[in-house]
Amino acid sequence: SQVLNRYTYSSTLSHLRRTNTPIGRDGKIAKPRQLHNTHWGLVCPAETPEGQACGLVKNLSLMSCISVGTSSEPILYFLEEWGMESLEDYIPSNSPDSTRVFVNGVWVGTHREPAHLVDTMRNLRRRGDISPEVSIIRDIREKEFKIFTDAGRVYRPLFVVDDDQESESFGDLKLRKENIHKLLNSEYDEYDEDSENNYGWSSLVNEGIVEYVDAEEEETIMIAMTPEDLEVTKSTMVTDNKSVKSIDEGEEQYDDQELDPAKRIKPVFSGSTHTFTHCEIHPSMILGVA
Image (tube, rainbow, N blue to C red; front, side, top):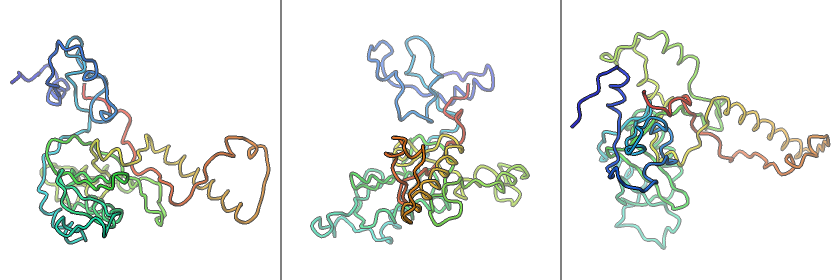
């Protein structure tokens, strides 16, 4: 046990969000003290003490949270209803391309249409039908679909990008000006979340505008650093589509730009190209409280 730091309000918050690596302070191994790629957005890269505890005592980033755990029974029931084959009925020779389904690390069955299953599960999470802290991971290379509902995982919020190619807002944030006006005009009361005038953070999560992802799910998505990156990507897609259309119609235009070697080797955009799926809320969110 420790005595809670009460010097200032921010120092108290910092102390409450402190993590400790259980390794001897006298050890000379450098790896546990160094930053790791999976710490991005979850652990503050700057806030750590000097001396022997450097890199071993860390602090959580501003908006990162720890999962408290939810029951996996509803998810298992949904998977059985949604076409998952149980292990008792699984014959590898009959379905060699099927994807293995894991729930909290336990192999529970296989599924023949993993892409459709993943989209359905994510839509359920964004609608609030399942807990927002549930992690949904599809590993295409290993043919695995993993779902985690356990406690102790670090996760953080991200803005969701509309990835429906038939939508008019394809490639834009799902956050709209109407949502901003609701946030500004609402009288938020944390004890009365069911009120109509009470539009806050939980409303953004329940409407699928903000989504929580953990370190493992973060490896399967594409994150834009700023909304400006989304605009650049969208303009590039429009330009590439125009160039493809002109080539299909037999229009050959030679100018100084087309003689550029970089232009010649630039890959042509197609509708199946993977674009951004999420966007950082703000670059400063990777830092800690203090």
